[in-house]
Length: 202
Image (cartoon, rainbow, N blue to C red):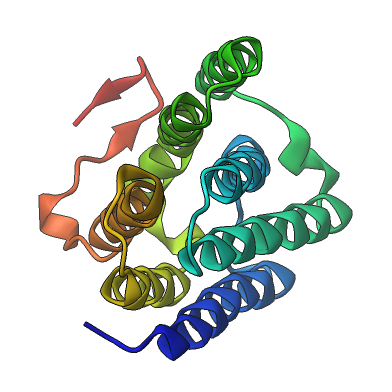
């Protein structure tokens, strides 16, 4: 276990992760998915509110830090390229389901359900980026996601009161970011190549 002071390290790493992706976006290397990044901020804010309501510890501050990066990334992406607002059918479905989950939480007003639904909504929001990381890894930043993985590991190691409210969201963020890193760094020989003609796999 790490001392509680290490939570500041986790927050710094998470902010660095967001900053790194922001720089990649400014340079035109990273092209964030509008649905994923918009909802990542919203779901993190919901999780933060739920953690605070249930008396969450300092790990809640990391959850709050998670919300900041996506807001900045989306703002830059939209200003840099208005075409980033174009949604695919997959984007629309994931957005609709994620919003439905958020509405369900609002109606129940249960903090634990809020946390769990924010994770479900975040998973749905992440699907477009999971697909993009696999098909076009050059439009993503493995370094930024890796920093987020390390941040979540540090966060989990600082937890003193192990309850669902304290560990569920950082553990999920660790897993989803590790998924992104794995897909981005996946060797070419293990990838399928999308063939536009006929929309089939080759």
